[in-house]
Length: 171
Image (tube, rainbow, N blue to C red; front, side):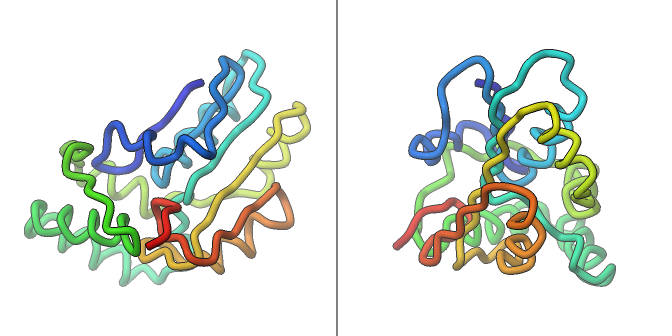
């Protein structure tokens, strides 16, 4: 399986063992990595049977002021930004992500916040016979899970886990 990590993370896939499919024909990504996984699958020239999007970073419903504020906060104090970000990712489970932290970049954050999910891309992947599964947590503090659900549910098999957060873990 090809896996794409979330922003400023590495090794977090261990939290998703219940959702991942271990085979060479699967692609998965968490949050920012879900955006990358979709683009990878869209442009792949080889067969991919399953695309698994775990808490896809979904910010296209946010106002430009939100994105500017996030970027300013990151530029001003990257360590504080990442610390708060990780706490929100782990909520409500309180999972310790310290061992998964990797330095993030302003460019990476800009890409994450500015990405626009397009129904046409998803439909193109589905037409190739790739199954797309999306997993969202109802208590997500990173994205608006309801808005993401409204976008993905008509297009993909979408699971909404009411008591889970961004890491898809419950208390």
